[in-house]
Amino acid sequence: MSNKIDIDWENLGFSYIKTDLRYVSVWKDGKWDDGVLTEDNLLHISEASTALHYGQQCFEGLKAYRRKDGIVQLFRPDQNANRMNNSCKRLLMPEIPVEKFIDACKQVVKANDHFVPPYGTGATLYLRPFVIGVGDNIGVKPAPEYIFCVFCVPVGPYFKGGMKPVNFTIADYDRAAPHGTGAQKVGGNYAASLYPHELAVKRGFADCIYLDPATHSKIEEVGAANFFGITHNNEFITPNSPSILPSITKYSLLYLAKEYLKLDVYERDVLIDNIDEFKEAGACGTAAVITPIGGIEYKEKLHVFHSETEVGPITKKLYDTLYGIQLGDVEAPQGWIVEV
Ligand SMILES: *Cc1c(COP(=O)(O)O)cnc(C)c1O
Image 1 (cartoon, helix red, strand yellow):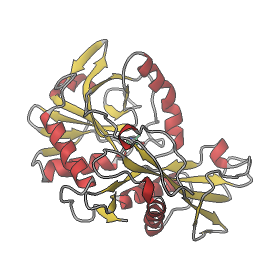
Image 2: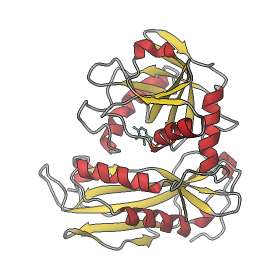
Image 3: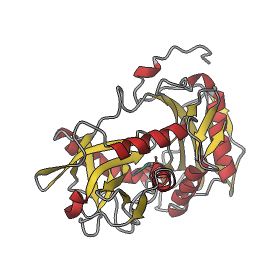
Image 4: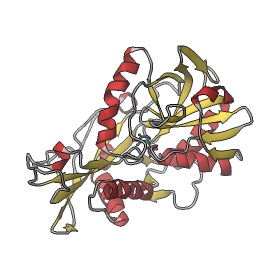
């Protein structure tokens, strides 16, 4: 185990690094065991595991932040626990008690304390909880056993040298079906998104925007992030649909837009043909907090919002407020912060 590490925090990317310890718990004979921390980063599972063949698996993503006073905190981990349980229910996997989920995250952060980046570097510790169906099985049915694991990786600031808007195009493909698993954080949705993502990147865009799979007339997701827009009347708008993954960042921004910025907020349809109703737009998720959207290419035309190079003022204010809360610099609403 390394006690001294030499990491260039400011220049970290988003790549796998083997940290010291990860948490592993096994579900067998109808119950979860207590879980252990282990140095072993390899899983030894049956070749017939449902996770490998039928996509019976789900995951989460959250971060630990080191505050100015050195204390490390998690941002709304109960929300990740609830969302993971929703994914588990949909795929007939056993749920994880919320307390067990939060305790596992805390154990992993504590055990890898020297991998938690210092305050002020822009780097954070990314936590990846996941549940997989394992054990001997060949028919299409739920697995006989499950593994719940949490590992962590230090990750760099998403935007090196400050936030910058990027452009998106509209995907020709769907990431989820109207009544499929779009609202659950399951690997299958991501497998389906790899190809459209690559097509968008090859054409010079950051990623693609997915429209609603039933009518292809409404914005749903921006790559693997949620969409929000600020109208010319200063309303915060975010799409409402059963096939959108409910982003914790998005719901946090919606709350802050209303309570801290005093904007009117609405979850409603966002018609791609009415995209010019917005003066600012962004993609939101744990990785970047907010990625400002410069423009969206639709029907061979680039619709630019605030600017292709500058971040809009409301987007900037939302970002500063939420990131300030995550870092412990801005007072958080009740229950949002869990100290490790
Ligand atoms: C994880 C995820 C998000 C972002 O959710 P956060 O809880 O804000 O990190 C958005 N869209 C998709 C498809 C996702 O998988």
